[in-house]
Length: 368
Image 1 (tube, rainbow, N blue to C red):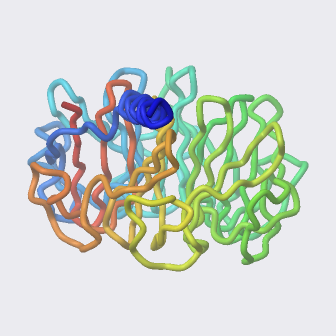
Image 2 (cartoon, rainbow, N blue to C red):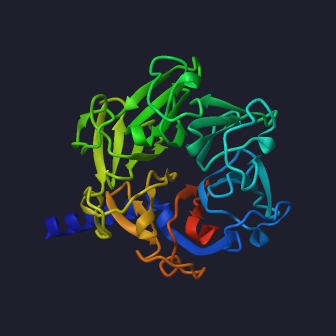
């Protein structure tokens, strides 16, 4: 009898811990906060819900408390003031694609399909300007844009030399590590590369260039990565690596220097909710973020869902969407369908922001 009671108590304590550390799972209603649904460039200086938003991708809250996000088809970065709901363009020239403007105001620069952006501690932000084959930086004080990696030409070269002279092939994602480095998903080169922001030197962080499977527990150096698409950094500095073609998620353990499998079987599909995330099927996963409880939120893009991998249990579940493409309705996140979401971000209060790309809308899931 005592043994049964003890087991029950242990289970109860474990379940309570899961609830306490899983703030994201207690989310409330989802609402649209930007975009009319039309893929067009319009509405600057006015209400975000009356603006044309062109395929929102990666997003993040800036140091000023506003939401910044990439508009893929408009080739711009836009800023949504969450207090006034006014939308403005802060980088790029709407509907104009190219690679130009370094050394001048970001609003006069030309970009080509920006995918993600990340802020550093000083408030500067870095943009993976994918088809421009460059990573660009907007200065927090001057709003001047410069390129910190890439030359505008596709290829693979430059390791152990200046990042500004190196070649990348679709730099699709960026994140700041805990050692003043900029990590870049060089997706067609099947590598994650690192730029030291102290020296400007680029090197390969992970990947070999081969489109092969990544064995669980394999060395960080010398192991293949099949289509590294996005990155997120955990509180302890370890790096989450999402594989688009590999349909899986790995953790780069920086102390052990290993790649550890945490989600996805490697086969494209939709399934596995309520079970070990390593047994789940994903389909072309893209954006990712880590909340303040350590849970991983993932854009399971081709499944049209936002999924969560619980830190306490390793279990995966669908947080928003049901695996089918659609446009809402707002309200119950389980009933709100998405259409190829590419970006997800969690703010300090646990609210979740989604780049609902093919619906041309930005959505927000508020905590209760």
